Structure formats: structure tokens, C-alpha cells
Image 1 (cartoon, chains in turn blue, brown):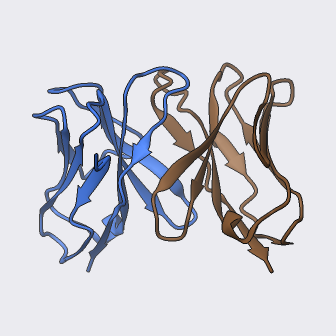
Image 2 (cartoon, rainbow over the protein chains, first blue to last red):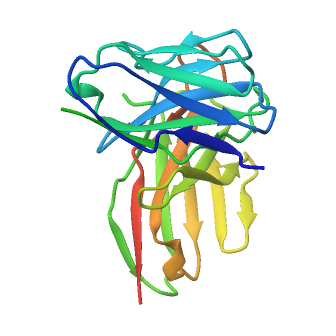
Length: 114
Length: 113
């Protein structure tokens, strides 16, 4: 049981390049989330999904797209990377949408956009 | 006003000390809160849920004060291994769904030998 995994762990992009971050969970969780964490800003929700085939915008969705074609995978895409997207990206999942449900986080992807 | 706000610290305490963190929240309708722990360059992990009646787990106690709209985390008998950033977490009120969380910026704790 690996929990939540993310690939890649590190990436350096040039402005304007595109890339996809992959999140996978083996806990059969319905809900999945993408966050970014920046110094002094805390974790901010980019997009989330409440089930296979569904996605929704979070607090800071601009410049990102997501897809949830399979229940266990949640992809985050950057179509044209900008230096402002330099950040640490965390994926998380949770089983249910209850008040007390825990979100489990992946180890993060450190992205630098030059 | 931010959804949740917490003192960024840093808090530097000696081993064995008792340390307390507070976090204020803006949405009076919020029902559920959490404390997450994040080690340097690692992912956040759930430390404790915060119930209206308080929650205690060993050396850690979390409490919710609805009248003043704050939650607290108390760590007794601090260990070196408690050194981490502690994140206050509550529901993201915009949209009204509790499964979306909003995170405080974190309080950095360093426990010194």
C-alpha cells in the first residue's frame, strides 16, 4: 500500500514549456486535490475532484488544468509554464466528504520555472 | 481576512517545555478543524482533529473555542522530534463544502536540547 504517490519529484522548466504532474492513490479514495505551497503563503487549493470524471476549481486555478479519467489518478497540467508557477505541488486524497475525514498527501513535486 | 490565521513563530523552546499555538478562524459556521504537522521538505500529515469537546492524544491537546473563534494546540513535555511546522486547517467556507480545506501558513517550532 503506497498511499499517495507523485511523479516527478523534481522538475525544471523554461517559460512557455508544458508539463503534466501525475498523482496516484491506491486507497480507493473518491476525492483528490492539487495544492501548491509557496513560502509565506501556505497551502492553496488549485483544483479538486469529487470522483472519476469530475473536476472543479479551487482557490488558484488559473494557468492549470486537471483530469480524472481514472479513480486512482489525478493529473495536473501546465500548458504554458510561467515563473510564478515555481512552487511545491502536493496532491492529496480523502475517502469521503465528511467533516472529520483526513486528507492524505503525496510527497510533493518541486517545480522551478526559469 | 484570511480563513484561518496563525502566528508564524518561530517558537524556540527547550526540551521538556510546554508550548501552545493558537489559530483564529473567520467563518463562525465552521464545524471542523484539524492540526497538521509538516516536517522540513516533507508533506503535511494529520496530527489531530479538533472537536468541540477538545481532543487529547498523549502529550498533545487540541481545543476549540467557538465564542472567540480560535483553536489551540498544546504540546507538553516537548521532544526534539516535535520540531516541525504545525498547520492549522479548517473548512474552506467559500463554496460551503467541508471537504475543501483551507490551511494556515504554519507555525514553526524548534525544540532545542
